[in-house]
Image 1 (cartoon, rainbow, N blue to C red):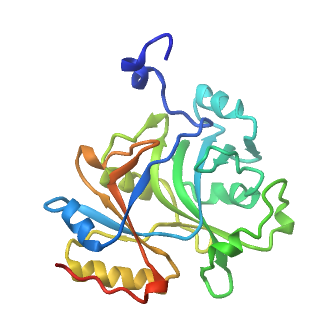
Image 2: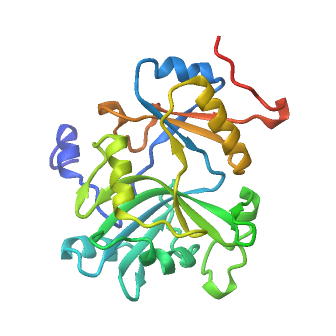
Length: 263
């Protein structure tokens, strides 16, 4: 910034694997009417809001350009994957979680499709019931050790639910629309049951559709919905921002089950 100045910061401070990016955050809402008012006349999408730990996964394959590999290898906690490359996991506060989730890093190569050489993935790590094939409460996830975890000692399994893509194959994609980023996400990764999945979403715009989707999120042990701008410049990813282009609709069970009404 001292060399190029604030106005040229975006041009000279490039997103790259190994350097965590402060994530985009959602504004909380008290009623679905706020959501409908905010996105009136706009294309938006709803996603399940998973009750887990926000994680940013950075990866560079062994055959990726050398400058990407050097960048992530310079990260203190970068974990080398024996067969496919180098990866790190960061929290929403840029804390290195690589040693907390060695089980994620060991399986990462199985989720990456051919041709995906580097990426930065925004996702949620969620405790997973292997037998029942369902999401477990956040409290279960918090019982895991935070450092120096050995794979053989892991008792609480996790599933990664990916909802956004910030960087792919040497290029930052944060300025692309959410619809485009979501398409790239599906093209670049392969879901594996109980290990890696895309966040469940729907693009319906009607109140009844949102209500049904909210009902389904409750049954899936989620804590509500994320509603996001889908197209246009406002649907780009805004690092370190709590943006009105992402709204959070949380359930409030202590007030009873809430039906959505349009006033």
